[in-house]
Image (cartoon, rainbow, N blue to C red; front, side):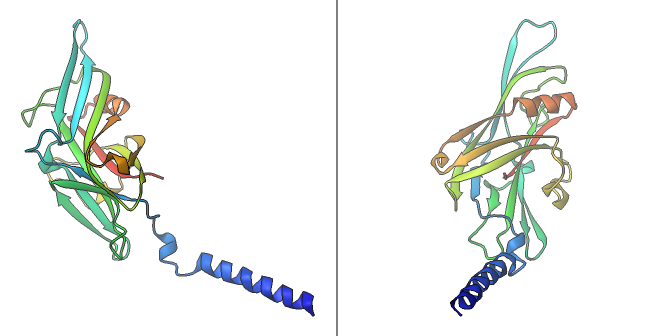
Length: 220
């Protein structure tokens, strides 16, 4: 009798565990809650605006060039995807760009941020010639806040989107041309984060792109 009762208890526990693993349907398909990050993107405050610094050389020129470019804020932006409603919200040129999951919202929308750096001088910045050999490149971003997690894994995707029509919902998940992974920490709030993007910049040059464009999103 004791053995039979023990079997029923164990069976009940297993059924409860299985039910917990498969229940609900909706929550199971949502991404994990691993942080929301805001980065400063005010063009009038150059000290905290996103900045791309590139070191390059030119054929036959015995000089190393170093230039710094601020992002084109009107063409920067973020896209939020609401997994419950299945809708996208696009924001162009905000003072704070968002990426990550807003766990404070019941629908837990996921944001992805986009930065655009013209390389052809079209916005009055420095020109990086198409025949330049990239020696190094670094992206600097200023972190305004980190919510819901002390460590946020980040993917920095090299992407290409229209500077004429701006961001579209399709840009949220286009295949990246190159990827760089890094972490942002709660201790980064209120300071610059320096990211090595040499390979991404080299890929931009090899493709002959007029803009260096990246997408920030949650990593695995």
